[in-house]
Each structure stands twice: as structure tokens, then as C-alpha cells.
Length: 249
Image 1 (spheres, one colour):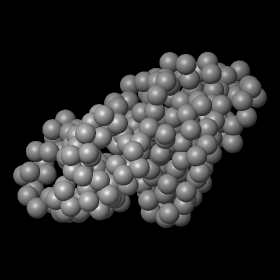
Image 2: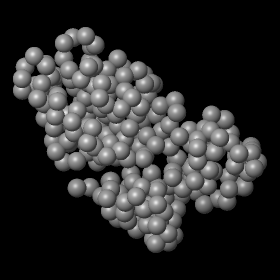
Image 3: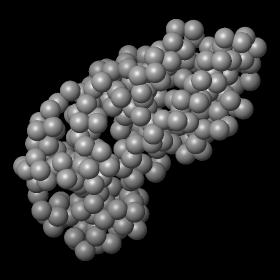
Image 4: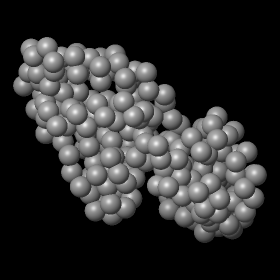
């Protein structure tokens, strides 16, 4: 893995993670691009949970504490980017769309192992990597986490079981809070209404299913929607694209 100050712009790390593997919270001195060549990961920071299907990657700036959870079998591929090469990249975590060219570049850099800026071919690869990351569209696949213990328990319940069909009052009682209390806490602590948080959790889960090859109908049913039209409308309203955008390429 990376060792800051060793003269390399980019270092690499590849690992296979079994379903349920948890890499505990940690931080790096280098910025980290976390990509799954296959499988789905969740990257958890102090502020949010980020879902990373195979067609996406997450950029974690240097110093950001994060844990990684494998949702199924995962082929994790990581690039560590040192300063000043990483300076143009965002200073907050972002989920980025991985176009075919970016995917192939990530895999090529993994073959090389580390990029030495003193070697012109390596310098060009590192420069192209940063350019493609800057051009990659952001994807809003983050679920901001509430701080209140009751609200957090409900958020985790919905994250693990997005098809939960209980009404909001019943769900609130299950974590020892009133509906009114949670309707006040969620906007204050996450920026989303209680209803909006649950819907986004469902739609993020649908993205994972779609990226894994599920049909639009399968994804809709799996995240609690009985109407395909309602699912598609909510999906477009949330992400600005149709569900088919997240199908494997």
C-alpha cells in the first residue's frame, strides 16, 4: 500500500473481499479512489453511507475516516493518489461514474503497480487519471446519517431492508420514538425528510440491484415498489436519469 513521501504519485492495492467483510474505520495520508471491478461495496464515513456498485467509484480525500463493507463478493481495486497530483480533486467524498475508458485506465495502472512522475509514461498516465476523474459525473448515492440513536437505528433498518412496508408511525415506535420526533430529527440531522430518507434508501438499493444485472421490474419490487411507473418516476426525480442508466455496460 501507499507510503507518503516515497516519490510516487500513484500506488495501487487490489483485494478480494468476501461477503460481509468489514474493513474498520481508518484514514490515509493519500487520497484514495475505491473501485469494485465486481461486486458492491458500502463506504461509511462519519457523515454518510456511500454505495459503490461496479459502474461507480468513490473518491475519499486524504484524512477522511472511512470503513468499507462488502455486500457480496467484491473485487476491490484501489488507487492512492499523492499530493500535489491529487490537489485538483474534490476535498469531500464523491461517488463518480466510471466510464469504460476510466475503468480500463484504473486496471492498467493496477498492472503497473505504482506511477513514478520522473518517468514520462507514468507521468502521462497519472495526468490522464486525474483528468478523467475531474470529468467523471458525480452520482448522488450517499445516505446522510442522523446522529440521534433512535433515528440512526431506523435509518439502519431501512438501509438493510429497503422493502420495509410498515407505516411511518409503526416504524417510529419500533425504535422507541414518536413519529413527530423523527419527522423533526431527520431534516435537522440529514437534510432529508423522514419520508424522503426512506425513499432515497430504496432507490439507492435499486441502483445496486440494477448494477448487478437485475431488470427494472426486479429492482422496483426488491425495494418495495409495487408500481413500475411510480418507481421509474421516483427514480428519475431522484437521480435525473432513467433506471436503465445504471445497467451494466
